[in-house]
Image 1 (cartoon, chains in turn red, purple):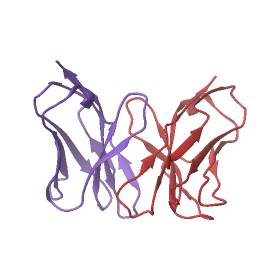
Image 2: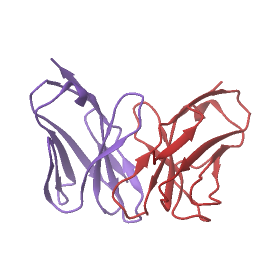
Image 3: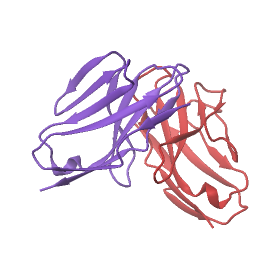
Length: 113
Length: 109
C-alpha cells in the first residue's frame, strides 16, 4: 500500500541521547516535511525538503537536523535530546511544494526524560 | 505577525450542522486548507480554497473570504465518526504552511 511510514511509533529517550526518527515514502513525492505537534499548539514545521539533495529550516529547527539523500527517505535527527523535545512528530510529503494535498505519516510519540 | 485562530472546542448533535471558523493574519496568502485529525492519528486532507467562495465536497463545505482573512468549514448531517479535531492551515507566499491549533469537535447522540 502506497504511503508514508514513520519509525518508531513511540520512544522514551534519556536526555542527552542521540535519536533518529525515520520517514519513508513510496509515492515519489518531491517535497517532504517534519512537524512537531504539541497540545494547544498548531503543527510547527521543523525542517523541509523540496527535492532530493536540498533541505531548509522551518519555524523550530534548533536541536534538529535532517538529510535528503534520495527521494524516498527523510530522517530527522536529534543530536542531544532535551525534555522540551517531548512531542508527537509527524512526517509529511507532497508531490511538490505547490501541490494542494500533503500526506502524513502516523506519527512518532517521543518522550525525553 | 503570523496568527491563525480557531475555537478550541465545539459540541454538536448527531444529524445537525456545525460551522467551524478560522481567522488568519499571515505574511502573504497562497491558499487555505482544512484537515481532519482523529485522536492519535495523522491529519488527513479535507479541503482547499485559494479563491473567495464556497467549495462543496459531499457533507463538507469550506468557505473563504480573503479580504476578511476568514474561512469556515461546514459539516452537514453530522455523524459520530465526525468527532475529531479540525485543523485550519494557511499557505504563505513561500509555500510554507502555518497551522492553527485545531478545533476539537465533539458529537453527541
